[in-house]
Amino acid sequence: MTAVLPDARDRRVRRRRRGVVSLHVLDALRRASPRPQVKLELARSSRPWDSARRDDDTTGGKSMNDEAQVPRARTPAAPADAGETPVEKLEALRVRGILWQLARDGQISDVRCEMPQCYCFRGRRYFEPISPGADWMPTADHYPRLKMHGGHLTPDNVRLAHRVCNQRDYIWRKKINAMLGQRMSLDEIAERLNVEKVPTIHGTNRWTAASVRKAFVS
Image (tube, rainbow, N blue to C red; front, side, top):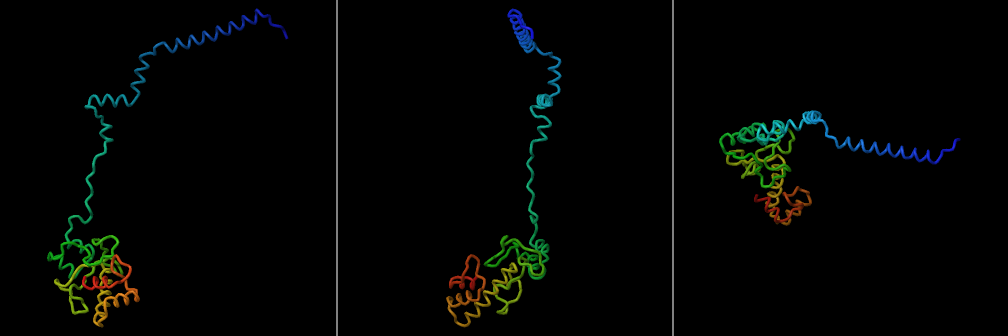
């Protein structure tokens, strides 16, 4: 291995430093020099948002893209039964007989369960089409004179009811009427109904003298 003289080593270090400095100077000059205008214009013309801005200037600040993206208010859809007459609603539910006659003659203005206690979880105006065993199909209830008391389904003795609501009301009236005929007190009737586990009126979980009276006179 040959020995390097101190003077030669110093000259090599100085040349390396000068080379590094010259590279930094060239890089700084390259950054400071302005870019060609042609390339800048081409870059600008290739940007899609610039064309949208020019469209805004010519269309009063609104481009066609903006107009297409603006959500437009939709007209709310009308309910399926909006505008239907009571006759049309009952016919859609396959109702015939006295209820249809009342609607035809203008004696039913609102298709809703008319029982004092309605148990339908979807409300009084919800009905299922007539079919065997349907809980919420429309039925004709003898009112105010019960069938057991000689009442008939005539225009002056009928009301619209859900099947379940109609059946429960009939069970109450039949049992309560029979026990009243035996001169039982309201407390005794309530106790008997609780023992027989007769379904209570809406909003209660146990028969009382007050609920017995309310169910009887409703």
